[in-house]
Image (cartoon, one colour):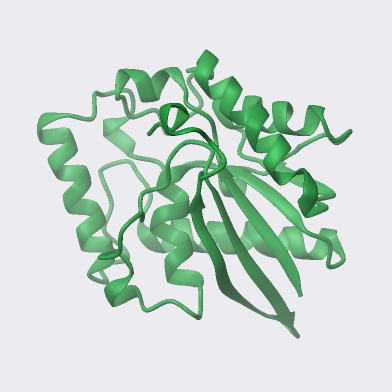
Length: 217
């Protein structure tokens, strides 16, 4: 058994611009995002985390480096936990038809259409399979110690609920506080028996350690 903590990156310039930036095209953390990461480091310090993995996307790497700088750790790049690809929407504003089609995609995924995708992007099945691989790798490396994965709101919100045995996915997205804000913390209990991994959700998108004025999307 092991606890895995998932931290969404701090506020980035792409968040401020309200832009799809699911590939690795710069968009560094803002000053607010760096402050959020510093507070996340202090908040998570008591969790006895000894291994940190990060998406290779710039804003996640920056967040992981800030978190680890206080712990004496070096984050490990894990491509399995990068944000999911939005294909032809990459770089576009999250507005108008692009936003409508993106919302429609997520609704289709929630309705079970796992192989639907935006042109050039990833399917629901692919992102879930990818996250499973990242979790399996962390469990193999961690020897039961808590691990931290610095990742992205889209990947975590659209993959992780479908992977936890203690969630009813038919009602999960109807609850309050489902959206994963910048530097919010989600945690699961992971068990591996033989070749099967099971996950149980412990906490979802907790950013209560940030002042209200510091919280952002």
